[in-house]
Every structure is written in C-alpha cells, then in structure tokens.
Length: 337
Image 1: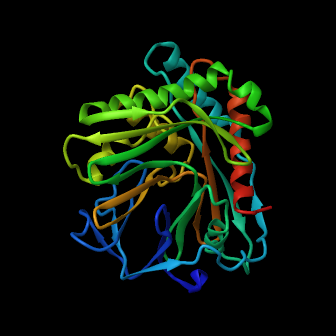
Image 2: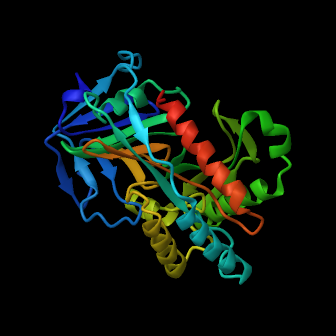
Image 3: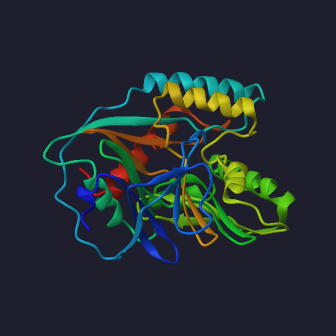
C-alpha cells in the first residue's frame, strides 16, 4: 500500500503488533466504539469534540518496508528568539514569585518543501526511523502531521496502567556531566513526582529508580511507573488525569497555569497537536503516545516544533540552544538535510 497516494490515514507503532495503518473514510466520534479498532487523535487542549477516529479498514504494515524516498529540498527559516525571550522572561518572573515551579514553552521552525516532493513522504521517513521510537501520523488531503516519539503517555490493559517520566536532556557525550546536573535532575523529578501523586489515589503505584535513556542523538532521564488500579476506568479518564505531564505542561497544574501555558504556546505559534496524546484502542487495550518529535504541514508549508522545560535555574541561552539541539535531532530522525 502506497502511503503517498492515500488522501487520509492514521498510523501508529503498537508495542505488541508493530505498525498499524488505518485507512478511510474515517468515522469521528465523541466516544470510543464498543468493539473494533479506533485511533485517539486530539489537540493539546483536548478540545476536539470527536477525538475518536474510527477507520474503515486496519492494515498491519511490515516492519521492514521500502527505503524512504530521496531526501526532499526544504527551505527552512530560522526562528526569531524575540518572542521566545519574552515568554521565557514571563515564566521566570512567575517562578521567582512562587507561582510556578516549571513550564514548557514550545516554538516552531517553519519551512517550505519544494515540489515535486510532498509532505506525506515524511510518513515513510518516520516508519524507517530508529526501532526504539514510535512512529505516528494523521493526515487528510491537504494537511497532517507525523512524528517519531520516544515517549508514551500510558498503556492501559484492564486495570493495569504503565507510564513513564521522560525529562532532562543532553547529548550522549555529556552523560558524565548530565547525571550530576542539578537543573536536569530537578526538571525530571518534578515530572516523576507529579505523575506519582496523580496516580496514587487510584491504587498501588510502583516506580523505578531514575536512569538514563540513550536514544542515539540525545539522552534523557527516564523513570517508569506502574499502577494497579482499584477500579476500571476509561482511556479518557487517564488521558485527562495525566495530560499534560509536567514534561510538556506546567507545575503546579491548575486551570490558571494551563490557561497561561496555552496563551504562551499560541503566542509562539505552536501547532495545536504538538505534545498532544495520540493513541490506539482495540479490544479494551489502549496505548497512548505523547506527540513530540514531529512535523506538521499544510500544503507544502512545514512546521517543526520543539519545547524545553524552564525551571528556576534555567538560562535563556541554555534553553535556546537546547531547542536547536532538539530540532536537529528531529531532522536527523527523519533523515532530512
């Protein structure tokens, strides 16, 4: 099946089943189906009234597909630091005032893909990425997005729920310094502690010790958490409980801090689906990714968005450099120039 010719589709890498491709026409619903497969595709704000996208057909794709097409020519425009610097200053002011512990500004870099190449080719590049990542995609005739994320929001099987805290970033060659970096450790423990406190009222939670996850081009701190829930809950319950984690949201997490983050993201022109949950449901088993390491398109116009955690010890220069490092990592993951 030639993904480049499909006018609409949804794709995800599922842990036990590999690459799954949903083809249209899609039925959109506010609630998941009683049976059969469905994709969950929402915005970061969780404001899509019909986030369940039910495919007309589901296809299993081979793990070893065709090689990606020749590299496209993309004309990238360098993002201006001015708007980011203003948002960063506002965040630091609120952190100094004790109103915030952490927040995550996200800013895109825009580009134009030159014909005859089309953005749907990016999906093929995502599929051929590192086996330690999860490709995902959703597209219609004129727009869409795809990504290669290392981060899962959760995996629900009955009353059992597995999740992870992934925060703190460095280059692999800096691991010796990274594991002792107070700023990166604090950023990670804010995320892990928040997830633990949100899950604990629902049952027994266990967490692993903080460790380093090497993804080739970047390293992160990671902590894995498992919940045995006292009661059965729907995927929507867990999505609203966990999204956004402080890895992409604000801490403390309140209506006011989330509304402020939404305003900051809007001012930075962050795509609506960046960092949003992206999931797949079948037979009561629900697997949900965090939609990062992604590219978004409308026509031939592209957006590559990255974000980074801001805490009390953050500096503008360091955070701006980290955003570029993450953008370069995304381009390498997609095998792009």
